[in-house]
Length: 222
Image (cartoon, rainbow, N blue to C red; front, side, top):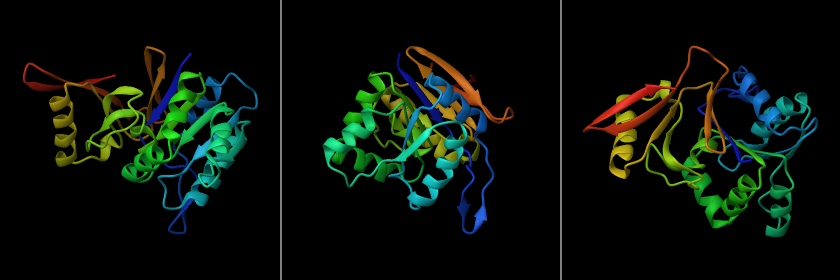
């Protein structure tokens, strides 16, 4: 069974500019752990996209250890064989947010993308937030090409996007004849094989399915 959770955004308890951020993704994190079907799953965090990877990891570590996980951090300076063992021996792989362009470039140049796709196909629970969501799709709203695990266009932080960003998103959908999935902060899409489920940690937020039909953009709340 293939399992992927893509999160539109939301703060975790970590310091940013000396301010402790709130914790906004609790219910989504709980579901990610539940999908592993293990009491103490091996959880691997990938912080390649982040400008503060250690700080980010410490926040994630606190959350997921509290949920019973054995938490580790992917070291991309290891040998490829060691990285392969770390990735494929995990029960949960979570890719954090940050720079989507840098993340995708690093995954592809190191061939870690191939390991992640293999992990997904092997039934390891895969997840990501923001840039970590984008990388699983064919494209993001800005036409950055991901791993194409989900053959669609993704737009995260949708509730914070202005008209310019949304118009870019709609153009990528139209020009590539693909469905779009837009996620507000604190909302995720759970892909289990061919089924899709919406997860929320804030019930005032939404996920949207967007198509270009009959020469117009049609937006549907999922």
